[in-house]
Length: 387
Image (cartoon, rainbow, N blue to C red; front, side, top):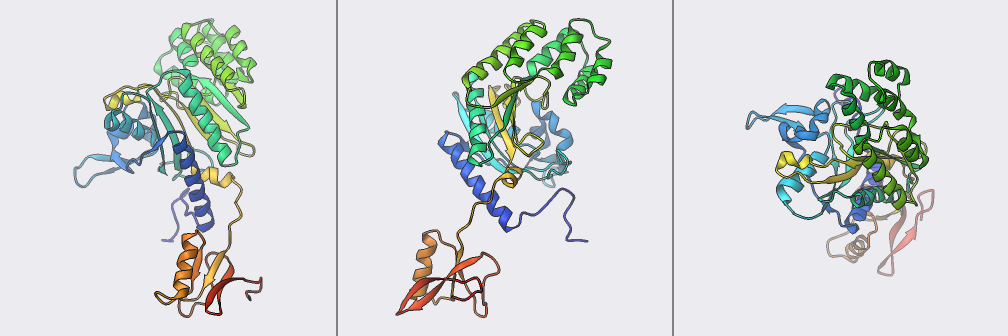
């Protein structure tokens, strides 16, 4: 049937659309007061730009088409983060710290998870130009504040660091194919498969890699990791960074997962994911991705996070909405027209009935304008429609 939408693509009907838009405004205002400036990258770009450098992980998720004007291959963005990195590196060209935010639709060739939309509304914030832990701390705090503003508090925020696995893989001398296999096994917490694959590796790297899936939990994990993993310089530095975050974010529900390597080829430092009750996957994700802007002319330190606003909106409680006001059709310049204009200027929803229209099938109306002694006054509408 022609009116059916593609799989994992859906309309947002009035109630959901209103909830999404209300949340979008609230969260973008939150970003604004934290100094994050809004940018609006285009829906389409040359494919090379969308997939340059760290964006190569997006290749399979990106819809591709041919530009009828230039003959070049275009991509429909699957992630706005590379676009924002391009804006920072190539267009703004600022020397100091830059804070940017964004919110718009992206498109995926396949759903990211069971039941997920292929057209998420990606909302996020990115911080460029600062390589220190303070920048990661700011972004993690902003991510937690974003969920709190949506009244979806994080039950836990998992932290990890891709340098731990990267250092072990390099020290063990694994090639690209074996590294990819290990990544899949670690992400799936496939302990038997991991043990079988690691049999060919020498000690202490074999034991260290096998330990990673078990290094998951509270703050004590950092001490365990320090004692169980080889003291490679990269690992020592990574654990020190995580400890500094632990010490400086005592009010947040931090936990650790040293085998969480999603986005491994994209991130190169601290990674984090927020989880909320009743939702099986991370509701928000982020991490450090230094240097991605190098493909656009300037390699800059970078860290940020993003989430799917549609999914977040589904988790928020619907706020009670004030009822709309029903009004008769008003003649231009009349007292009724002036009254309606004043109410709308004050933020009230007024449905002005067209000739022959008896009531609103859209916004629920709980009041109506009635004339009394030459003035138009508000009167409650009873449940039976009278009043």
